[in-house]
Length: 73
Image 1 (tube, one colour):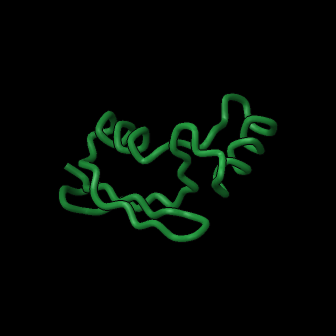
Image 2 (image 1 turned 60 degrees about the vertical axis):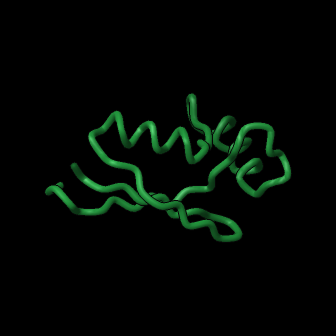
């Protein structure tokens, strides 16, 4: 990606110890179906972005999913 372009991740975010969330069910499914699969928190996705050379941006929260924004460095 070129500098300044945006990456948008559409994910079900799960924060630690937040079992009262749609993402908790998705997390359970990921653990059963995918090898080492799991839902992540906004902080974990931001760290993955930083590790990949992106600058984390805003997080838009909707009832069942979130949109996490990142900017190419």
